Figure 1 (cartoon, one colour):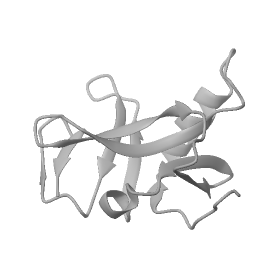
Figure 2 (cartoon, helix red, strand yellow):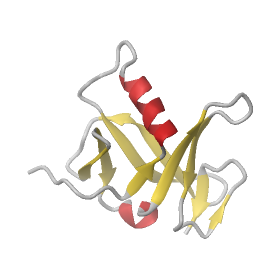
Figure 3 (tube, one colour):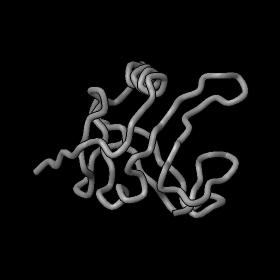
Figure 4 (cartoon, helix red, strand yellow):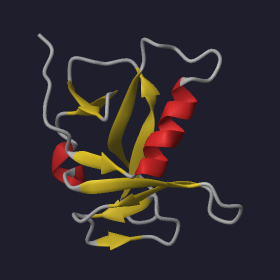
Length: 114
């Protein structure tokens, strides 16, 4: 049974544009979903996960502006309400995470504590 939930996170227009660009790249595996999640590690305890992977039985499926996304059902408590942005500048290129649940973040912006 496939579980579909309301999106726990949002993307800025620039993040959506970059994700769509990645999905259109030659060799992209159309069987993959955009995984959003967390894992232990980083300078403050947890690190964000953002990448393309296959869906597992633990994942919840949701769509953000037509993009199929997956998240381990246990990660939502850490990420609900988070906004993901993309910066294409020369000095700060990459995805950034604005998480209202984080009690502490590190300088690199990819690690947080709750």
